[in-house]
View 1 (spheres, one colour):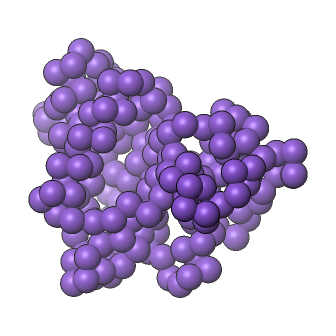
View 2 (cartoon, rainbow, N blue to C red; view 1 turned 135 degrees about the horizontal axis):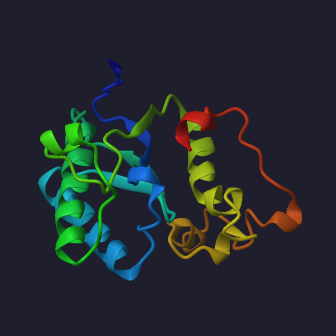
Length: 187
């Protein structure tokens, strides 16, 4: 049996990857985006946190979030978001992936993978690299040739605020590399 050790840093910033069960391409539909948005906002009302960066792809999402001072309960937040999304998604007619007998006995649903990948942000450089990685992810996966062409990302918010120029991350200027990040565990 695997045992996962997570770093809980009160008030810290964290990078997350959350993946659908069997990589089902369900997250970018209008219904799923609305359900996810509602689940995140409801969670923020119960347990505040700030979303610094987010990208939504068909089968996974990446998020950079910051917790309030003294709070380290990100696992509770993700558990709640995934549970609420799953309930609403299935109620809206969404389908789940086939489950093993043991998962059925554990009363699991086949919408999200059981766990998530987490990385504790160490410093400003680490934060900036993960921030860029999140926004560049649709280009990395071949969905678009320019970050600005992917609609399901906080990139557009950061362009409006002057953090990124509009054509940042366009493959015309070359492919960005993130070899310094442990991306094999993220994807």
